[in-house]
Image (cartoon, rainbow, N blue to C red; front, side, top):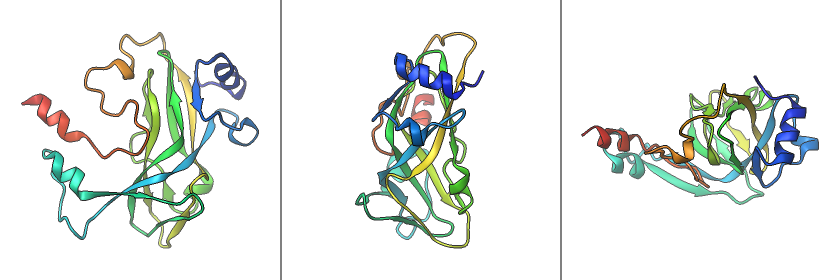
Length: 193
């Protein structure tokens, strides 16, 4: 069951869903979601320095990306075909019986910007900021400003509290993040060896 605006409000008031800093519900609360805002930290691939990424080699991923900090009043320009990781201003903490689902906002999508490729589900027990996979699918560059409402989280009840919440899962790679984090896929390959 997807939580309505009333249920989201109650869950926030009761501390079941924790969002920090607290959202302005007059502008950020929708009928079934809460808008989150774009942070100031971005990670971009330096494709001119690296010809490919090898997911089995951690240095390949880390070395291929550069972190940029954007002034809160300055835009981050997404060129056509560009890809960047970015995080939300807000940190989210979920209980063991709710999952979060990140979706792009329609107004942003109509500019050609997608905010996630496949990573839309935030498991019960998630804690941290959301890393978004921004892409510009359009033919024109788009200015994205820190603080703008970039995505929306909806919340769904699971059939029962999970046995192992994400924050306690062995090998969780992204719990507690406060800035965008590059792919840690290489850690999965090490676990198999």
